[in-house]
Length: 245
Image (cartoon, rainbow, N blue to C red; front, side, top):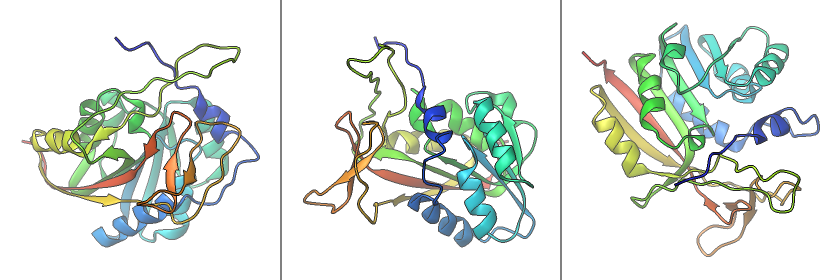
């Protein structure tokens, strides 16, 4: 049986005034995929797990044609910071696991980057993302995904510290698990998988659970974390061809 776990890293990371505010390289892949979908003018976009709004700020500055942008996150401190940083974007508090959070509006694009690996089961968040999508909408999920048909549920704790709490945040689900959930969703869907490889080196930082890169036989910049996990990000790009009856 897994120990209970907490997600305690988000505020420390996203409220750190010294952190780099340069857009993450994965944001560029997400933006390219959204532009390729050619959504109609005045489209709407939802970012689930938006934190302080970094991804939405990138989209606002680089994706023309979106009339409405919204971000949702569970942590009030992060949402308050996002509201201060990015005028003209709607932010609200909510959970990816709460179906009620997704009933307020339908969207042309739903994005979730770096969030689903917190959860021990993907079925409910994926169902929630689908429930707020319009016909012909795109749903893009960026996370560590395993090409092998194996799901990995992770808990970690920091040795020698003042707290012995187990932490969440580095589950790795298989592409096959996502495929199965989408196939059984009841929606008319098509989807594709897009690998993301870090294009440059990232140094190791003070927090060993912040990823850095190493050189391997297959990759010059393989991402790794302090739990000795090799982190291979992928984007699953889902097209909603028809809604569930």
